[in-house]
Length: 162
Image 1 (cartoon, rainbow, N blue to C red):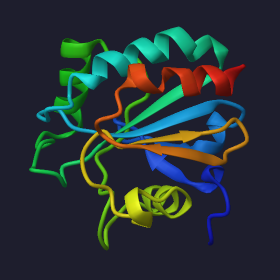
Image 2 (image 1 turned 90 degrees about the vertical axis):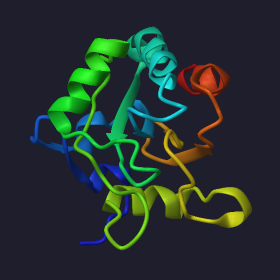
Image 3 (image 1 turned 60 degrees about the vertical axis):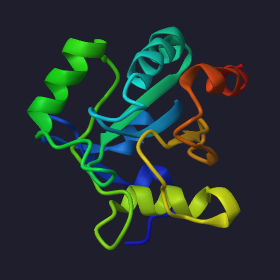
Image 4 (image 1 turned 30 degrees about the horizontal axis):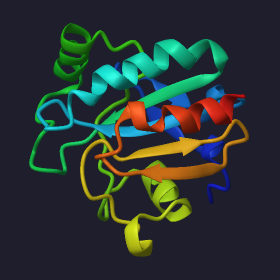
């Protein structure tokens, strides 16, 4: 089956349950590949603030742990969930660990990279905390570098939700 839309994908949540992304239709989405032992890990705090501020206005943040960059997400799903809860009080949906690059990249990430290329037109994700902003209609609108903080992208989210 060819995925024509972000809503065609299924993912596993951090508890191992299958989730269809169609469940998020009508919401703006911020999809982020995360890691617990990365220099960018404190972005969890900013992501959680964005989520709490904009959730009622239609923003969902989807966190996808990834261990492909410096082995900075070595734990299993339960360890990741505990880390996020205890250290950052994360309440946005977290998903099972995925690969974002290479032959085993999750189909969702293949789709995101194809529809929003990085610097110089590359599809490759360079590091943890690369973010993709998805419109309420499912269109991939923008890709943000790991160095783009949640606070810096808040204005784009605000514009999208208004």
